[in-house]
Structure formats: C-alpha cells, structure tokens
Amino acid sequence: MDKQQLKHLIEVAAGRRSADLCITNCHVVDVFNREVFDSDVYIAEGTIASFGPPNAPAPKKTVDAGGRYLVPGFIDAHLHIESSHVSPAEYARLVVPCGTTTAIADPHEIVNVCGLDGFDYMLGATEGLPLSVFLQVPSCVPCTPYENAGAVIRAADIEKRIGHPRVLGLGELMDFVGVCRGNDEVLDKIMAARKCGKIIDGHYQGFPEALDAYCVAGVANDHECTNGKDLRRRIKRGMYVMLRQGTACHDLLNLLEGVDERNADRCLMCTDDCAAETILRIGHIDNNVRMAIGAGLDPILAISMATKNTADCYGLHDRGAIVPGRRADFLLLSSLDKDFTVDRVYCAGVLTAENKRYIPEPVHYPTDSVSSRVKVKNFDVSRLELKLKKNRVRVIKTLPGSVVTEIMEADVDLDENGVWHRNDDDIVKIAVVERHHGTGNVGLGLISGFSLRGGAVATSIAHDSHNIITVGDNDRDMAIAVEEMVRMGGGMIVVKDGKVVNAVPHEIAGLMTDLPGEVVAERLQSIIDDARRELGITGGMDPFMTLCFMSLVVIPALKITDMGLFDLAKYGFVPVEAED
Image (cartoon, rainbow, N blue to C red; front, side):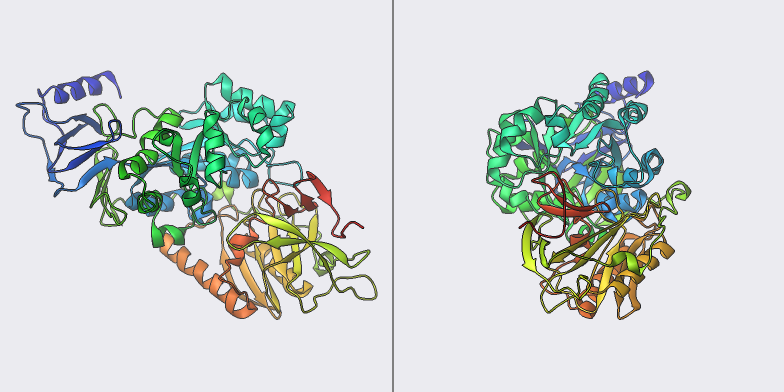
C-alpha cells in the first residue's frame, strides 16, 4: 500500500469518503475478544476500513449478509500444493470456495524433483492468484542423504530465495537428527533463515528427550504431533502446534485432547497433504474447523486457530482478523455450528466464490521448466530379481490409515537359486527405481498389507525424493509398470497379467497435472477402484496413498529408497535378510 492509498483508507475510516464496499446485517466474529458483535463492515483499497463511522457517505456498493457470520478468511498453516495432484491455479479454484484465502506452502515435493526450477515455477504459478500463497524454502532436499533426489539444496541456494517477499522462511526441518547433532550444513541453513529474520518450520519425529536440542535451534512450530501429550510438550517449549487433517494424516481429533483455553492461542490448523478428491468431497480448512466444533471446541476458538493464530505465528499481521487496517479476506458463514456452510468468500474485498462456485477464470501457467522429469537408465525386468542368502527376512508392515510402518520378520519361499517368489501369504515385493539422474539404482524389499494378486501398481509420487515406487507380486508386471511410467512422464499406473489396466499421467514434474480438479478426482478414484477390483486389494486401502509414503525414511519405522531398506531406529540401511 502506497501513501496515497493509505491516505484514502484513512479518509474512508474517518467517514470523509465513500467506502468501496459495505457488508451490512452481519454478525462479526471478533477473534481477539472471542465474541460476536453486530456491525456494518466498511472496506476500501482491499482493506477493512471501519465498523461504520458516523455520518459516513453512502458506500459505492452495499451487500446484505442476511444475518450471516462474518469471519476472517481461513489460513492453511502448512501444505504441499503438489499433493493435490493439480496445478497451483487449479488448487486455488478448489480451496477458495471452501473459505481458504491464504496458504503457506512448502514446495519441497517439486523442488526435490526439479531443484530451484521447481521453486521458481511455484513462485510464478502462484503470483497474482486470488488465493494468497506464501512459500517456504525447502530445508531438506533431499530429506536425508539416504536417497537420490532430483536436486540438492544447500544453504547457499536457500540464501538466493529466502529474501523474496512471498517467502516466509525455512520449510519443514525434517532432518531432526542433523539438527540435534549440530550438523554444519543443517546449521548453515538455519542461519540463512535467522539472518533474514525468517521463521523456521518444524517436522519432529524424534525422541522426547531430544526435543530441547531441536527447539533451541529456533524451530517455531510442528505439524507431526499425533496426540495431546505431544501437543502440550511442544507448547511447553514455546512452539506452535498444527492440528493436521488432510488426505493422508488425520491427527486433529487426537490433538484436541491436549487443547484448552490456556494454550489454544498456540494451535493452528493445517492440511499438509490434501488431494483434489478430498477437497471436493469434504472441504479444506473449513473441514478442520467443523470437526473441531463438532468435537466440542468453542467455535470462536476453532476459527481463531484457522485465522489469527496462524497469522501471529508467521508474522502476517495484515490478515487473520476482522479489524480496521487488515486485508479484507473474509467469509460469510451460515452459522457457527458444526454444520456451517461457507456461503461467500471475499479476497482483498472482492467476491471470489459464492455457494461453492469459484468466480475468476483459472489462469494456466507454463510448465515447460518442470516437465519431462523422468530419466531412468539401465532398467529391465532382471533388475527386480530379489536374491536372498536366507529365507528369514525383514518386511515393511503397513498399518491401516497410517504412514507409519512397523518392522516384521517372516519366513518366505526361495527357489533353488535363492530368488524370492510369492507364496500364499500377504507379503509382496516393493521396489524404488531412481528416476532423476539415470544412476540405475533399484532398491528392493518386501512389504505386507497390500493383499494384491496377479499384478502391480506404481507411482512417481514417492515422498520425498519422488523416485518411481512400485509394489507387486511378480517381476514382469512391476517392470511393465516402471517402463510405462517412464513413457508417460510420471503419474500412477495399474498393471495386471502383463497389461496396463489404468494410468493417470502427471506431466508436471511427475507430481501434478494441469487438468481440472474434478477430472483429476474422477481419474484418481477410477485408478484406485481398478487397483482394488483387478488386484484384489482389500480393507479400503488407497494403494497409491499408502505406497507414496513407503520411501519417506524420516517417519518410522522401516522404509525403502532407491539405495535400499532403511531402519529409522538404527538410522541406516539394513539388509532384507533378518539378523540371526
């Protein structure tokens, strides 16, 4: 805002000039006093000017709210746009009608694939959207040294981007081991943020006794809490805690057990990973707020967690509340009960969505710099052969509805050459094929919980380095899945009996597509249904959502990368064969 705009805003607030917009007949939610009051709200220059100065001239436009509640626009405290499977512009089209007007995005998925080209794409593709998108510079690319990503982001790279006005700080610091051990490269990244006075986002999956060493580095928040005790332990150390509810992780209700009026100001709302289908079906941050209210939390506290608290955490003092001088991002809600609807959404004082309909025309940003990002060399079906020295093995045990795994031991069948082959149990093969540099790396292991037969599934979405990951009960179908993935430039695929059953290309870095969200949601549901029906996957499992987290080594317990089987407790690679 320049001086002339500020002067005009003051004139409107003082009642000497007409406002651009007046919202009348509304109940204003005050997130500071935690109360509701009735008032007109006057808006000018995209900013809230006043609550109605006496003898003010008639506004240029008046909107009757019809007795609805006027609340600040919701802010998602931490998310990855890439996890929606759609482009940033399409993401905005999906979430703004849900009431999300600001998003704090960590683009580490696309940066793991494309490096700073990916970061610059996300900056460009989010510029000028009605949804305000702030970025964090990824801190862990790769997230550990135990896999091959498409790029390596060092402190010097972070320094090149962290000064951008839409960059709030350092993205989730997943290398908690590096922090706690005082690793020089990790500390250099922290110092790059500190020099600019920018925030450091957390991601702590370590032991409670090491939390102080992590916090003392200046980490401001965490979204990896899973219960009320963890929430209170972090708040005790001055951290903000994000109540996460998305497609992959459902922590909100468990975390609410630790929330009360004394610590609620340190609680934020986030989705982290939220697919287009989830957004279309149940909403976005509005879903988090509804769930919290439904669980008995005071509605104004729930709204504060989704607005003011996040603005406070990130220093976004121009938004997050309905007060003079803040950005006119606001919603009109039908009620403050657990079944409220978001009837209208205003971004910077402009009606942007009404009755779930997004009003602006979506803008398509060029994707040339982040396409064609699948480069696999020296791969054929023979690379999938799993030859073992003995039949007692370690197995990745998946847990229903969780990205955490356990370590299981089992006896498996080997042929006369010591090569694994499927027997009648639930154990199948998992493989990670490096797709960035043509190293030829193929990591092999065994996994339980997929219950598939006669085929394979594969995806190029595999957190966080996003190599090709596939699971199947025979090498031929797994190889076909990998080869087809290379041909189509990334995405998701189902193969049965040597034939491709379904495939959904993701042309943007192998992570996203430029198609409309409704089309993406339909295609993703179709490929999940085909995987279940054709391969016999049971238990309501989404095989792709489960599979894409099996390479994330910073989450317990046993995972796999292109370099092999990784045991987080030992913080190192282990053989498939179990120890004697």
